[in-house]
Length: 500
Image (cartoon, rainbow, N blue to C red):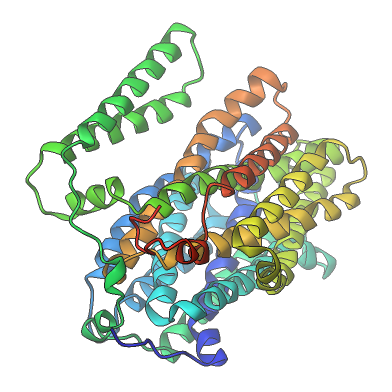
């Protein structure tokens, strides 16, 4: 095995710069799509269901793109063709989104936009693993976090800043103000420009050279999926039970999404146990069934972390406008002031995330990755829970400091813990499968948050943020089950996926 060459700071900068554009568009989506939906007539309790396109698209797209990019090599490279194509599609969706005339069209554009972001984002995660030696991967993921934070800060503040610069922040019923429209147009330009920078300033290792760097100790044996039917039966039973409960107790229709997902995965695992296929679906499901054990433990951390983030993204605008500004009327000045302040809060946690991305490596040196991640997640949990006790919306900026540390940690430390335990030939597919445990909690949030708010919290969206805070606390506790690579080495264990 050859040692992979280290890259200079500016080489790492160039290869990660495209993430600024991805996050610029992603932050515009997170901060403004609920506002767009409400403007076009959506009820606040229906917003989680309208957001279902985002996680469902990621669940489908990312493992497919990872599988394909693992097997791609042409004159444009291995990963670069995918994240550039995704950037072009996302740019077109950003330009169209603020001009959607009706709600169903906005929901469809969200689907297209999120699929495009996923096409770009998944190869970028694998790109770091391809290009950098293990010693530089934490720096690479931290650099991505910095660009994520910078892009998100500017994008989240755009409507607020445009208002301060004299751009109209209100509009006729059913129409978006110019502040939102111009922000999306600027976002499209930034996304495409940043991605072009990375595509034109980086190169990729050819497959043969990349394989020569691979550590044979973490090569993965072929998956034995003969017992997958047992897991399939469990999923099928859970899905059937949920359908019975929905019908018997006349529960909300959104829960059919969750039960349907359980049944689909159950059928796929049963199929996996008996199929003789060697096609892409068999490969993806086989790798999902046989994922490395460190990844299995990290999945629970990801699950609760991303449930919390999704709950915050889809409810912050309505929670701030309704609770702190006293209005849910999208044509009112108060609502739009609250929506702008929600954008400021989104920008604040992302801005703190930039600083946190610089400080987290220092914290890791003192406490290790596991304890550092736990502390950061608990800071975020405390920040979201504090929404229940704060009365002045300006003090919410303090709450978002904790969320910023959690966000920076979520974007870097799980990937640093994971990447050294993945076979080089399957870096893309496993990064895509890891995304399942980002997407599944988002699907769960979209399915049950609206129901929970109606049944237990009188439809008050601020309680969705409190549930997100509790979820981050649980995610921190799950981190204690994850052992760091250095601990495995000192205990004499292999660093392969079979070590834990």
